[in-house]
Length: 567
Image (cartoon, rainbow, N blue to C red):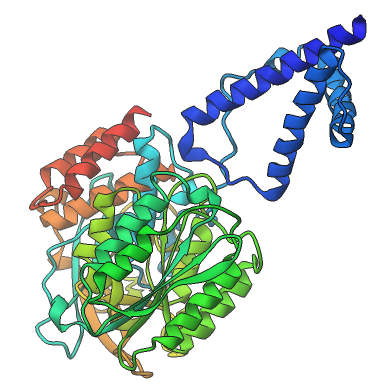
């Protein structure tokens, strides 16, 4: 009798667990974790365990060997649970959430440097916007994003700015600087360095050989994953011509070629191939990426754009899982003239760290698509820039004048920093600028005579601010390579203090808006550098400097700041 009572209790407890789990999963689709084979097996055995215990509860011994084994496992596990002093919280926790396995690089905010000891700041440009769109999806779900998900430069570069374009294609981008006081601290100035690439009309761009490498594993079976992915890639297909080529490779339990290299004007064949995709199986990423590069070679266009576009919600969990091994593969194919762009979807096991690094190494860019509106931005409105590079290995080096500048801090670009000696080394890979792209970098600087974050050095040389190159604050140097060239070119520009704005509100509209975005990213990252500025003030600055905003990107930003304030 006691045995039957225990069995009934065990069955009831298991039923509660399963019921709670199903209810919770129904309410949290955006944090779904892709079940591994081990988890799937455990779920199957758990179901057998339930059946075995229920059979025992009605005094029917399980007949199958599997059920008998499961019965004993269930008895041992559930008796252990029932022996707990208070098992109820373990059996039905209303606040339980499935584990979120999203992965991000460790990216603490950049520190402040004394110019007297570290006058040079060197980094690679970056036009990736994936971090902003990813964080936006967190905020719109009412969740505070992980600090490492926030890359300040991706926030700033998400928006278009009305910088003057280059007058000729001899230098493929213009270089512009602006200086004004920081709105969060009267003792700080902000130096903006802005690059603007020339644009290319769609009818003048190079022919493209594109390989869509699509993750169709079981975890992609959600509305904001595979269906959105198909809609997104279809946008590209609708804007290709007869000189272009498209291939489609998928990977799940295995990899397969869904569409051999096909002329771009055969849009229906491309779209039909995309619409035929269905999710299911594991994530055999290694064979998928190798097969995609093989298709890129099969359709290779000399002097054209040859690019693999990887679209996935997560990690490669079968085959080569080492990030270093994947980096080597992508780097090798980059040297063969095939670049890599990465596009992320969904939440739960999203590997932002891998996606962003692979795009950097693959001379591509990284985007995150959470809505069709974002897909239109990345793959339609910015298609030329997404696909066609106008300058490669673009590096920026700023030399600050210790006679006028005491301290500086680069906002963002943490994982794009370079050694100072890498600036002149043409063998060191750096970022690309696509057609029409803008690149913005902001430095927070403290002038000599103002109160800095670091104490003055006792034994420093000449920081009176009265001698040495007058009012020069810094020299900005930019190195870049034209498409197809191996030797870099250099352009320089001086920044003078007398050109700075005394008041922040005197700066240009774009300067003020970019500052609001930088402040938001830093505050959301909780890095204490902008403690003097509230979310409401950031929203006010952005709202007052919204300017021409035909697609409501800036308006949406104001809404995100207000959401963050309420969290």
